[in-house]
Image 1 (cartoon, rainbow, N blue to C red):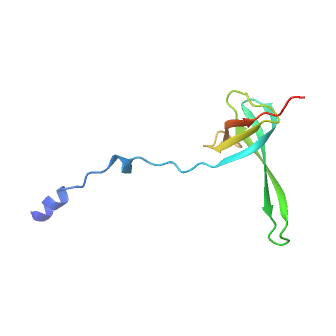
Image 2: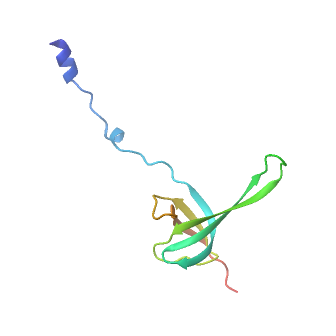
Image 3: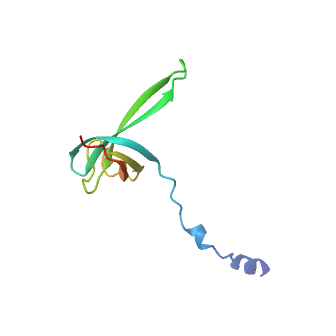
Length: 105
């Protein structure tokens, strides 16, 4: 009987333990190279990495297809992109904010 009463008593669960925390999403800064698609822009991200063999710095570029809901960003804009759920076959990123626009001549 004592074992049954101990099993019936449960500890209260804190609400914070019930909520799932979302992992930190990656944020990258890049330049828009194409805006020809609807609601999609192509962002080129450039980074410099050290070559493991020759110990010199090499420029590496990656292009991401990024979701732009309102088609407000244009070629040359420097933007911050954030990782998101898959939106299509190629789109896994969305534009978070505009950092700077190129100066008009």
